[in-house]
Image (tube, rainbow, N blue to C red):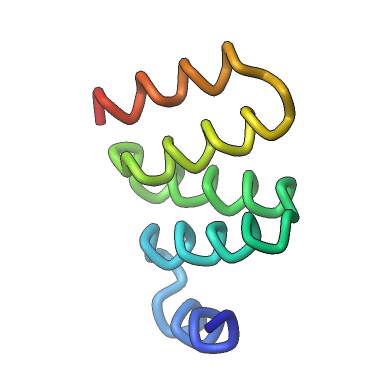
Length: 79
């Protein structure tokens, strides 16, 4: 799946949806730093992407920062 997402990303580099999908793959590999970077890039491309906020929340939860995780979940609700 990652190979196809990377090819699609070359065609559509500003797609926040592709960034979220790539971040999700990073989460599955437990590469939380890369996932966080990709979720943040998705939010740079589309500040209203609720899925990206949820992803950021999940990463912060993995890092043990529950307060920041909750703040991002609230942002997802507002998106």
